[in-house]
Length: 138
Image 1 (cartoon, rainbow, N blue to C red):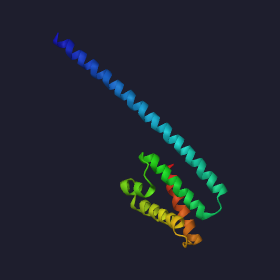
Image 2: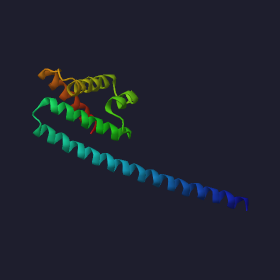
Image 3: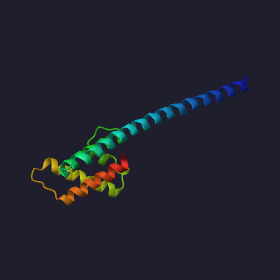
């Protein structure tokens, strides 16, 4: 009789393990599907932007919005880009974090400062930063 309880416990643990493994599989598959759909959506938007948007100021603003969206999805938050970067510093290399901040600050100047006129070189560099970071994330 003592043996039966031990066998029952082994079977119970085995089946519990199977259920947990199956739940983890389903959960991870759902996230992969969502990440893939987010990736496809963002890639389409980026391709369209680069084909249609000739004004680099507008391009910087739009790429900043897309980066914010991608990071919101990645970190499951509704925070703005600045707060996401502050709360998730460890997710980026120092160089990447500095570059993203630089690009985001230029975007903020474009949006909030009516006297700000960036050089074409600043705009080109900022577009390059967004393109690199989005390429890494998407």
